[in-house]
Image (tube, rainbow, N blue to C red; front, top):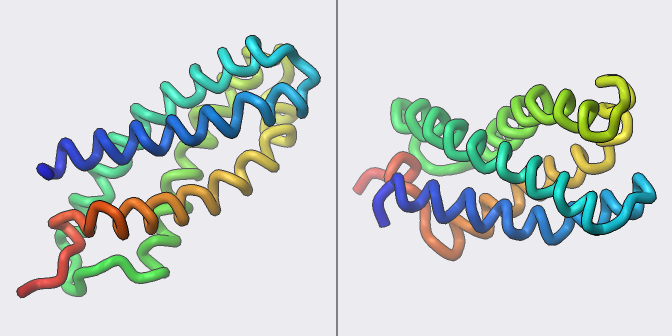
Length: 142
């Protein structure tokens, strides 16, 4: 599959699984009706989808310029930290507005989800690469 198609498929699958998890969890955490938290989960995932595409484009561009090819644990860790760190900066204000709370409160309330998504991003990317193969940017030279 082309790099562009691969990024779209990866981002969409990532968000589908994320919505399925986040909607019910937000409902429990914030004691809100599932319909409301599902709406928030869709908004957050829509933003994350755009960020995922942009971040992975930048990451693969940088990755393609590395002397050593492949995706080591360290490279996967850098991917997870970069993706989740950037996403946190974007999503905390959205959550604060949606939940009518301060950015600090939104961040504190979101810590559990941040921890989950940090691990999820690394695990999902690993599983995705196992199923679909490494992208051209990370494939070992032949």
